[in-house]
Structures are given as structure tokens and as C-alpha cells.
Length: 237
Image (cartoon, rainbow, N blue to C red; front, side):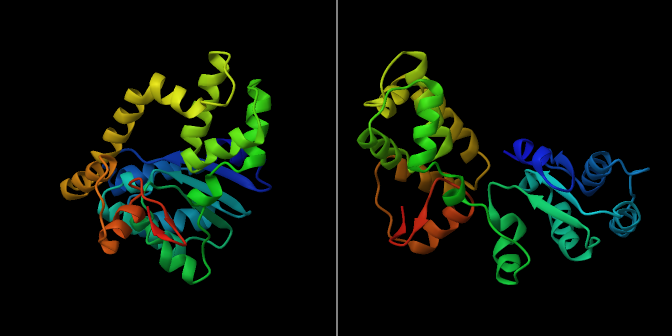
């Protein structure tokens, strides 16, 4: 999504991804390479100075997977929001909004959140995807797919591709996709859960198995970490 967005930005852009366990020095290297800085900074203060010298025009720097960074590097990425030159705007992506304390910056008017609501497919987008893929559909089938998937892009697009590949309509797209790719999707979820604490992994697995959990604080913790919980007006699900 970032790589689709950046070429269409009205200002200069740069992109880097943070590898798992990235240290502060690794973060400096990634940012220096993205912005073509003349040298790799050797400290946080050096990084800020280098940015102030290099960024003279409005620029957007997208830093992907910030939650991969080691705690000290993550703390410095948060500090950069305050200390970087005004011409530099940051786009941070993360599975967990807690990693960058998004609520604080949103409350202060310094940031906006592109969450699951913004990323979810709506009916018009789903119809356009079906038409593009040549998948027959009715408005009722579009509504059912969105209800079954919550508009989750990986599910909507997966179900649509599976229907297109096999020459099927959208009538049973979700179940057809589950039967073909359910095991791979389960492995995807399991791999993401490996990043979480054991007690959180156990709770998500119990929810997937159909257990009911009324502990709103625990559910909030899972949702803020991006662990397959959605918050809406009716609570967590």
C-alpha cells in the first residue's frame, strides 16, 4: 500500500523497512539509505542534525514495520516526530499501534490513524474488484462477502481471486476460498501470533476455537496489538 501511495505523493518521498530486532545503528543505516544522506549518522543527535541539513523541501518518509525495531530504536522513532525538521513528515506502519504510542500523537493533533476501517473494502470497492476480475455478482452477494470478511482486504481479495481462477460467481466465494486456502491462512495467523506473548497467543487461539471472553481490558490489549480483534460501537469482537 505504501509503495502504491508514495509515487503519487505531491512532495518528495522515501521508503525504508525495519528488519526484525533492528538496533539504533541499523535504523540509522535504513533512514540514511532511504534519504540518500551523505553518511550514516552515528548517534540520535547526529541523525537529527543530518536530517535538518538534508531535508530542505517538504518530504514524506515512510518507515515500514516500525514494531520490528528494538525498544531503544522504537523510542527514537517516536522522538523523531518531535525533533525532525518541519519539512519532514513521517508515515509509520506497524501491526501494533502501541509500538509508537499512536493515541498520544492523535490526541495532540500531530497524527492521523489509517486503521482497519480505512483499509477495509466497502461495497463500491468490492463491486469494482469483482468487475475487474470478471467475477459475476449480485448486490446481495457483495453484502454477504463483506459481512463474512468484515471487509478485511486479505480475505476479500483472496476470495475474489479464487472465484476468478475457478470461474465461479461470488455466491459462495468466502467458503470456496476457505476450502482452498484455509490452511495457508491458518499458518499466516499462526506466524503473526508468534510475535505475541504466550498468554496473548493462548487467548487468541481460544477465541478462534469459539471461546467467549468478557475481559474488555484483555480484548483491548489484543486489538491494540493488531491480534485479530476489531473494536466497534458495540465493543470488541
